[in-house]
Image (cartoon, rainbow, N blue to C red):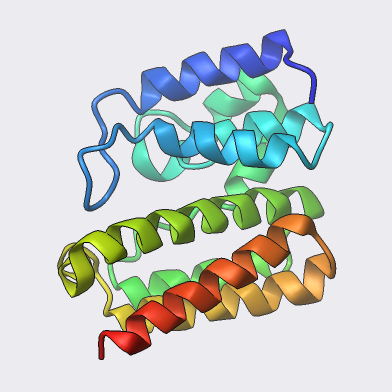
Length: 189
């Protein structure tokens, strides 16, 4: 993927909007997540809008003052649509209900949104494996779900990815990471 002015603007915007935020269960600056996901995905697409969307994929969830209309103004309607398709509805307070609605939306999302969601879930799963190896079940004390519910959710996402993306190198990595997480969780039970 070629580095473009639009991608650089998205990097700056992501850093600005996530400034001061931390990743769940760590003291890691949150912005490392969208940057990591963009880096992962950039090896598998030349679509500038997909890379911009992945850099901004969590802003509608995590930055209430930044709206879809703001994304349209700064990055275009196509980027805004992709970001919208991978955004959870935070107005739903119940974790399970929110995830079910996300899965429903994902099942009809665009191929670009699938790619963003896949790279996002891969990075989240790899990050969870790292902290789970270090802290064990204590990691889940900070989540709104049990480890079993989280694993079930990730398996459901994987099933959607299999039906919509068929073969994709990141899907292979995600499947391996999910198996590793499942094995870790079962070994600690």
